[in-house]
Amino acid sequence: MPGAAGEVPPIRLVVVDDHALFRKGIGQLLSMYADIRVVAEAASGADGIEAVLTHRPDVALVDLHMKGLDGISVVRALQAAGSPTRLVMLTVSDSSFDVMEALKAGASGYLLKDMEPDEFCLKLRQVAAGGTVLSAEVGGLLAKPQPAARENIDVGWASLTAREQETLELVSKGASNKIVARSLGIAESTVKVHVKHVLQKLNLRNRFEAAVWLRELREGDRNAAV
Image 1 (cartoon, helix red, strand yellow):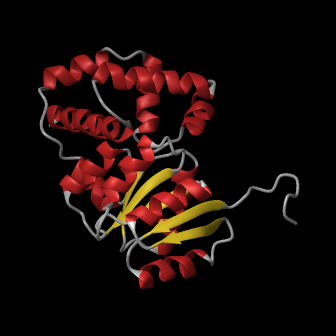
Image 2: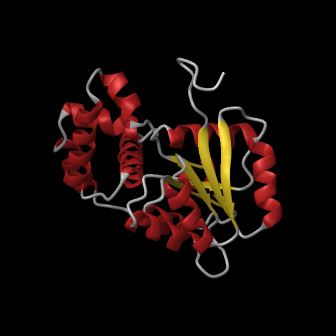
């Protein structure tokens, strides 16, 4: 019964894509999952911004390449408007340039349209819970950033407190603040402070860059052990 005690409300979703068949396909797919509900669709970037600001969904799926206002511009506009909606790029592009532009704009995820349905819905649940999500292929691209001096990476890691290192480890795996707090036995507000300090100390802009940075550290450790 709606509103029953303990019942978790469904994830509210807006789909922004200029291909009608794809929008309908996403709607039909997600209708099979009781915990995800599409509340609005938009056929253009401008309409997508309006839909997100009107419906205030938990998550918005935004196509990258659309006529007129593209997906990156939509994300930037919604970020500038202070929208709390988690924004996820859903695209066919696996270009590392597109991925980084989306992350810089403020996207909370980057997913490819050829994902398996169950994996896709799992990613939606993760991002709605505050996590960060990437398709596996995209994660592989981000694991190859511009090389940084090894000594700078080591100094950066050493500059973090033990708790900040633990926080970074969990965040890099896509854990939300709530999950990090539960894992470390600390308050969610404390996690936010740790994440802020990690980004400041390592001169990073967001959680995605933090994940890439840690991958680079681990790759250097593996190479050094060989």
